[in-house]
Image (cartoon, rainbow, N blue to C red; front, side, top):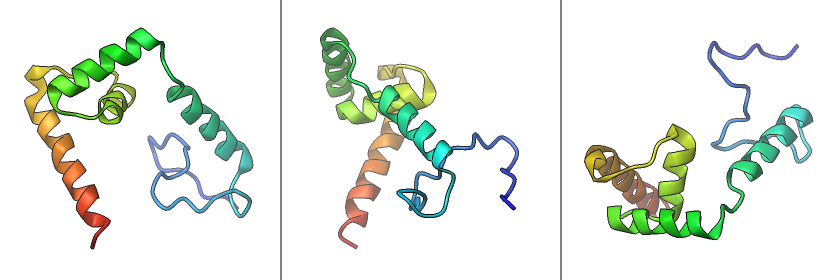
Amino acid sequence: MARRPERSHNGRPPLDDYEGPPWGKGDPYIFLAWRTAHDKAWKAPSHAVMLMRLEKAERLGLSYEEYTLEILERGRHLSEDDAERIAEIRRARRRSRSSHFA
């Protein structure tokens, strides 16, 4: 019997160390639905939007991917007023880089 998801769980496959399909255990429908949603979310925006995001990201000291991920995850554009959140993203960047060499 399948485990019931925890309250407020959105049913997506776990992002870290996901061992579901291709093609082992796991629900293929959920896997394919989330793969489609991921591809749709990361579909390239128009050239003008991409340039605008890149300019803002560089001004804040973030990469394009970090800035775009913040928009996708939290639904808001960062500005200079969000110094605390920007610092948090930079700290996470340093942790992920150093973990590759550990």
